[in-house]
Length: 100
Image 1 (cartoon, one colour):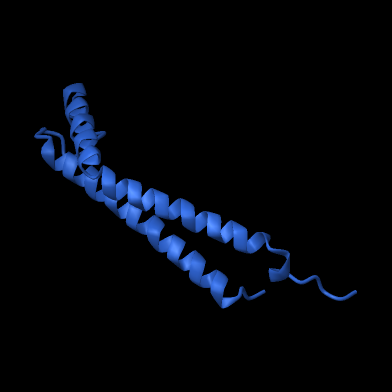
Image 2 (tube, rainbow, N blue to C red):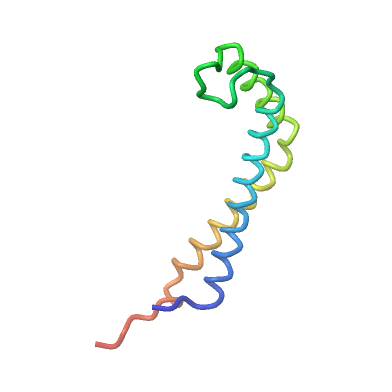
């Protein structure tokens, strides 16, 4: 079954917002990793110390705080998009029943 153009447009916009949110989180994690000077190459290395993890968590928290407006706006937009899709799907006129 092919979905109507309006539904595909709404889901594509929602998917793009989800990607933007994931990309932002990835950039914040990378920036937090760059902020920690450690002999370990990455989190999870055997040389990664508890103090490195604490510094990484603190750096990530600070970066998230600095980006809170963008994160909040994307989360709110995503919620609105998901609500619009649910409302569109729940309308009975969108899905006519086939004739018996």
